[in-house]
Length: 590
Image (cartoon, rainbow, N blue to C red; front, side, top):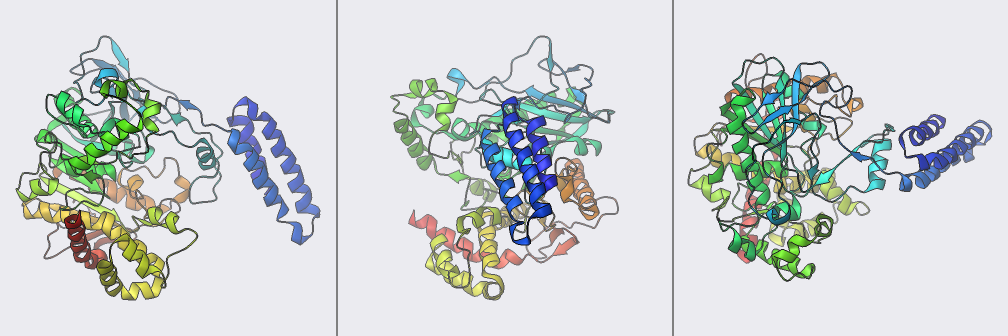
């Protein structure tokens, strides 16, 4: 307790703004009180120091604010700039990684800023620039709701899922509508013509950043793969739809501006690949969550044909017949657009475009789904796959064992799912028929742990069954498919949604190293090798790693990535027919 009070004092004094000095003195008083109580108080009063600690924390946190600023591409330390690199549109200079083994070019523009009259229009290719662009810092992330400063400070102080004090006031990344940039990591010594992996970040299409450490590209570059992370328009800026926008568009499109940004980024990357040492004929797209949904959309978009060869999808897909999220009809999208116009009391698009970005962020509508716009997506991805017109030549995809837990648990925090209420909760989430079928199919699991069984069913619905459909569609078209399930628990995200990311891209040591053991680092090396091999050859196998067999419905080998690395049975498979039948009933009713 004394140590915690002391470190909290140092946190306030050394990392907080100057006006927090007064609160730092309060924390010192808490330290003194804690010391006296711990030494002299009777046993029943020894909880008082904890109370005092919580009190001073409560007094401090509301006044703390993460500092907003630029983030170094080399993750701190001294910036050592590279020699200028000539791209097709102009020159850039980046920075080396700390060990000088990787060159990083951050904030490379691929399209003109979508601001002013360009808001809610197709991206405009980047014009040539004069001089040398300084690309040692990440560009601002796309416009999105700002993080709650109190929660950000608490996370800074106490980290996630562990009583592991951090006490660093991490820099809050800047936000801007001018955000169409990408970041390159490439080996410092390379002979050119290297494979390229383009990563699309997640965040429900409403949040996220291309600079997040869990998919930092240094480790991938050390494997001989150029890694690129891209930013794209989000939320109301990226997925707003309106009939007047269709009328003014030369392509009669609306609602998929973020997806069109991704396609423009891929065009720029392919055209510039020879300039930064990449092979334009060996490009893999990858993404997690909404980024994975975007990958499945790109696999079905005629505009993305020829811009990449292989695809990696982690924890989401809209390729199935009835996507459970991240996808909507054009009619639904247009209705929401008209509602947003009414919400802001605007007469026309001109008035909407005149609103500030912050004002638009106050909308109560999510704008978190792609749509059939007749341009980027003329048909549903399911229809494209059924016709055999998808773009990828190989697919690696999968999910984590506890995908939905972080989403479901908060809803029932004070009323956990149990054997008595699970049937009614399933019925409210699905329908009576599906609830009865789930109760029968998961009878043993419900008897053992109804709480976990409910979460497993929701995980199957939101994440696992969509991947099964995606894999089936791709495999039926003769494409090699490699499927996985991530099962490695740890002291951080574990097997929750996004838990696999720092393993797959080799970033366990960046930010939360305390949560991982030797077995985690060994698994990360294996996964990083699988992912990089796939980017190189369209096949994850190589070296002395366990063989990862291509998937088909008959043999059904699901690769476990955890303490055990090897084929396992897909336990969620019994839920898939129930989900498919329910989705069909739901769609027919709508």
